[in-house]
Picture 1 (cartoon, rainbow, N blue to C red):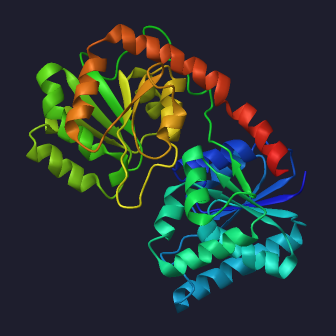
Picture 2 (picture 1 turned 45 degrees about the vertical axis):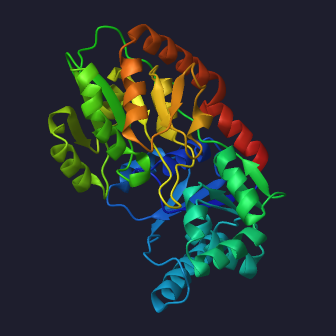
Length: 377
């Protein structure tokens, strides 16, 4: 097993699906084989103490990913110096990058200096957004060309890499997974968080591609058929103000719960006690949902799921058995499907049970970590 430096801006306690992915996979690597360089976080002490490998904290956040400005050059220079110091001090033999940019560019500079190979993770939306900037596109291609491996988080992302970026020989598909011991169905007779309600739950950052707005637009149609419907949104983000205004303008504010960022236990209870988990994602410009780890967590808790027909979300479920894929570009198809599902509790239970089995068989972190060590070690 080569000694590995993982560079990632997103890492617990910072919330984010990719950060949880890295945490779960790399904590299962053999002791002493991993070092992590991640962003500063004032609440990191307890999280770092729980992680079995050494974690270094520095400033990995930059509003500028290019090198055509002084701010960008200073950012990359400082980060490269830090990576170079860790590489020398800890005899690093390979670097793993949480993204192509900016982490991958630093790894490329490190390779030019110390001949240390690097591997980059790709999440889908990152390479799509890179296409919108000539400078970032050029830098991204440069990073890809010299990488040892490119890890796609889904077949959908892999197809983007093949068709738009010409990546094939270095390409490895490795999906995120779920902790099936932690995310499990609720025990019997637990008091409900939402007594008397039929609850649709969405967990995730409040971004346009996640589709919270489309679910809110669907609520007037849902309420006509399901009067006790309730929509709970867990997470924060830049769209919150717009979503609150939308709910008020449609006169469904009483149906929408903005729960904000929850601790792990409260979020788990939301998964376990909702009637339907929904990620009504859609493509917005070049922004797409690469995979959708929250769909795994909901199924692991024995809940049926609904996802949009864009990006890689369909790879998380078995259509018709553990959940459904719906066109979420308009509210009517979404409302019709939610009404159909909420109106058939026995079908919801059957889907939830099948989802739990699907997660245990195909998405357990323990099994995915074994594969990762085989492919990346």
